[in-house]
Length: 206
Image (cartoon, rainbow, N blue to C red; front, side, top):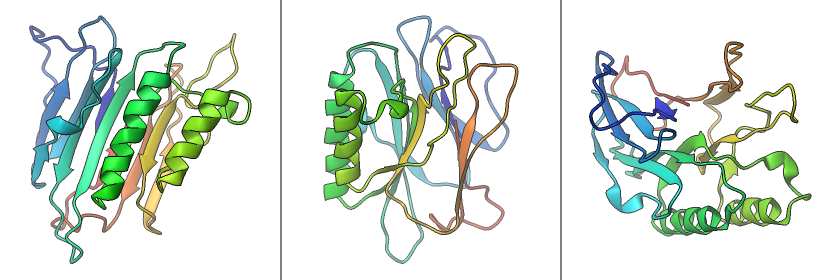
C-alpha cells in the first residue's frame, strides 16, 4: 500500500505501524509531501535507493520485490509525490529517464502517487502532451483516467496517477469514493503478478 503526502518528520512520535506490514518511507523537508510504502512481511524486497528521482520538490521511494514467477522478472513498486509547481519539466525529464532504465532492464513496475499533472490537458498543454507521448513510447500506461481531485472552484482533475508496464487480465484499477476529502484514494489490485505465497494480499493503493 502506497501513501503520498505522509507529512512525517524524523522526530515524529506518531504510531504509523500496521500489523504484518513493514513501513518504509521518505520524509519531506517541508511541511507537506513525503511518501511511504506498507509492504506485506511475506514479501521479500529491497529498497532501490538508486531509483529515487534526483530533483528538488519531489519525494520518491522504490522497492524491488522478489518474484517467484518462472520468468524471474523483478517487479519494482514505487510511490512519488511531486510538490505543486508550474515548472514540471525537471520532473518529466527525470521520470522519463527512470522509465528508460527500467525498460532497458526489462523490469515490471507499478508506480503511483500524487504527480500534480493534469492529464485532462493532453493535446491542450504542450508539456503534458509531450510527457504522455514520451511515457507511452516506453510501454508505460497510466491506469487512472478519471478525476481524483475535486474542487468547487476549479475543474475536477486526475492529478494522481498509477503507471505500469504490466498488462494483465487479472488487474483491477479503481477510484474509491471518499467524500470527506477533496482527494479520492485509488487502487490497483494485482493477481498472480508476483506469485507470492497464498493468503497474501497483493494490493497497491494510494
